[in-house]
Image (cartoon, rainbow, N blue to C red):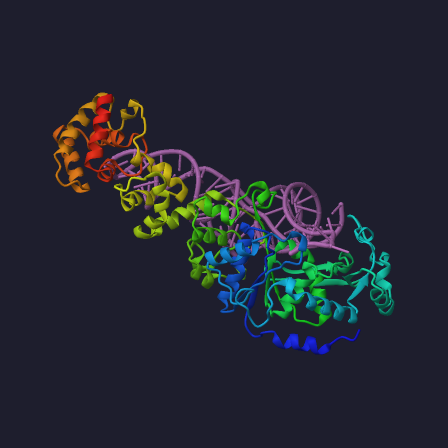
Length: 494
RNA sequence: GGCCCGGUGGUCAAGCGGUUAAGACUCCGCCCUUUCACGGCGGCAACACGGGUUCGAGUCCCGUCCGGGUCACCA
């Protein structure tokens, strides 16, 4: 089994050097967790902050868990979030392919190289034999570990099924450095001889990751902190090959509460779910960025960041070591901030479908209704119920006419409405200025405060106590005819 | 259970040996006002606990407790 050393030399020659290179390496399981999205964001930010390269790699080594269409969700989400990748399965690049299942041969070759170097070995044990349950394991118990290469090779050649395991030193310690957690040292005897190549010939995540990260020239390995305890084994692998060790960046998880990670199973929202719930991509990214990272120095108090600003401000020193609980209320607050910061035109555009969901009447202006809504909604999805009254006057209780602060009672309302119907009816040009003029003039003439006439007019026009916008705006949008119809209706009922 | 990592208000968080312990969300008041919002102002609320080290500790060390991760031929 002569190793083709030339192959390895060629692979080495292809590795880009000199620039920061990061990779987002999801396994295609169907949707984008909030935690995944955040990892993708941080990975992208590290690359962009350094003027480096951001790579997308698909990790599909587990054949049993492939989900149809899952990679499309990944592409779509990254594109929507503007986390553009410079290299990947769809755009290619100097170290293609970027899908692990297409790199299968490579892993096998490197595993063999590692065996040659003495840091791995063939293991012929049945699954059950090596699947020790918790507690101490004794790696010396695995008879395959001490097989000579020649013996093992003979059994392989004879067609016996095998896996390839990493040979961890039985004594000593291994220290690795993480950009967030610092130096961490563990005793080698607590590490197991993990499987590198599975019985089906596929590499495990742990092996494929190291090989690909090296072969793709990744300088910063960003991943969840669940891999922290495997990191010493990765170090041993890099050292076994004689490769440079990348900078590890282990991110703590996003939690649903103090004891559980966010998970679809618990009904926690994925990125797609949040979009469906009416959240803006920019707001989600902004919130999620701050969930685990915070700005330092003179921008320590800044909370609103565009993607570009994040890329400029991002630094590893601001990363948090502890898990963070996802708070939908704070996300909602960010969403409201983004909604309000939009130009009225842009807001009207995103709000339109939600407005039209409830307000079908084309005479009712989307842009005018949107203007009322902009400061008053935190999520797009709450729009329809807020504006439904424009389309159809709800049934309402006459008690709504009672309002202490406005000094209004049903009796007062009756008086105000009949007067308002007359004066509003006399308006020729139906606009806000005229309506306001007429109504405040009425209040002045009747020696009451503005609120005393505005309250009943608004109630009669809208049929509900709380409305986006005041009496004047609502009447204006409704139009003269409909306004008068509603006011008369109110008067009749009183 | 072994190993690893954490622990500042309910939540996200600043803080790097000397601060009246920031800021944001939430909640509560007040102002603005044509309802509700927006905006403005104010308020409630925290260094897990016990020992050290030090003139001085949220900040350094040790222990306890609590939480998370991991211990797969899943990633």
